[in-house]
Length: 231
Image (cartoon, rainbow, N blue to C red; front, side, top):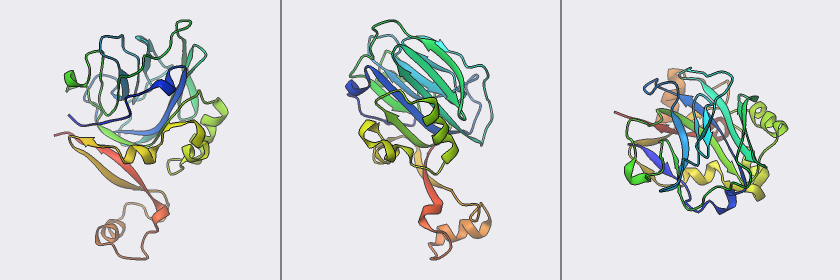
C-alpha cells in the first residue's frame, strides 16, 4: 500500500474547494477507475474522491462524467470543484459532469485526506489495499474556493509544467510544492518529467540526468512527479 497523507484539518475546505492536477494512469488493475485522491471521515458517509477517469463522488453521491477514459501512460488534467451546493468536474479543460449537493451540507472536518489510495469511513487504518492508484501525479493543488471555467482553461492551456497555484497563493490549502514535502508511505518515488521538447526521452537525455552532467538539461526543463509504484 503506497500513499501520501495530506493535512487532516480541512476546516478551510468545509464550504468550498477545488482539487486540480495532472494524472497519468499506468495500469487498469481496478475496474473502470482508480481514486487518486480521497477524503474520508471515520463513521461518516464518504466525503469526496476523484478518480483517474474523471468519475468523482461527494457526500456519498457519485458524479458520472459524460465519458470515461481508460488511457494509460498519458497525462490528463483533472479538476473536482465544489461551491454553493454544486460540484463541477473538468477533464482536459472540458466540463464533463456536475451534481447538486444537499442544501446546507458542509464538508465534515478532521478526516483523512490521502493521495494514491481510496479511504472510506473506516479510516486509514482500514485501507482496502486493492483500491490503489497506479500511476503518476504532478501539479496537484488544492484551493479553498471553487475555481471558474476560465481558470480551469488557463491551467490546462499552461500545460503540465506550470505552477498555477503559485499565482493564487491566498487561496491555496496545499500546493504541489507543499505536497512534495509530505511524508511518503510504501513505494512512492519522486521522478522527473521533461518539460522541454528538446530533452525528450532519448538515451542521451537519460544518461545526462543520471550522470549529472552540466549543460545538458536546464533545471526549468524538468518537473517533479510522484510515481505510485506497486509490486
